[in-house]
Image (cartoon, rainbow, N blue to C red; front, side, top):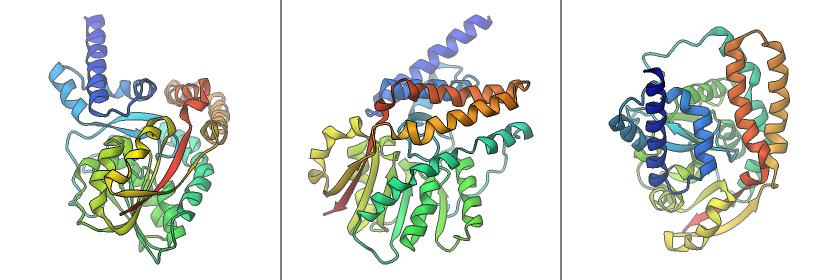
Length: 324
């Protein structure tokens, strides 16, 4: 019975992924591989029938691992309870699953945001390519734990709205906002990218580091255009291979391409994953007798190994667009 159950779970998981691949054309095989590595253990408990699998497939979306900047894509299970944007400020759910103290401490010791901050120089470069604006209002779509969100607030001196579906990441960002004394500049919203209901012409800038693949490049440009003020700017960071053949469609979607630049081919490996691999190795030695900790570290190492095999696979670029 256990073998049958495992095979059924694997079958349903595969079907969910195939449905997701059809719904989100930008997904590549390696993106699905990343998801399988990182999220299959979570889905085993809920993929019990084909109907549930297909329902789940409707609710999963592409998201860059931790704060979007790196071009390793995962398919992230969104909450079955959708999160429209009509609740202004993100709040903690009524129930939060308990986290073992040792694993919570380990998460802090890994501190992925520390390595993520190494890539902020590209965020700053992209922002500097936008014509100067006086205290702009910025929407950070798929903000994750908010490493770029905080930086955008400091760079712009304006107001930033960080939007993400993941409550745990929103909670992390809220702590950063408090720690940086930026509550007058930054607010958070737990919201699906499919349910954004901001009024027309709400923002001077929409910032999308990785998140546009949630709904696809063309659909993102089309649906987000109404949210920009006249002459507003859309900044997209995406895998180069997934977007190059779509750039020629930008004028037809009501934008012009102002500027663009590519990150160094192996930037995500040399500046993020390789330093993190060193940290993971140190922690494996420290927690060598803790099975739970080693399992968590193995998941991180699997992600690292995927990039290590072919760093150039994850080359990416920033594109700065202006609304016509």
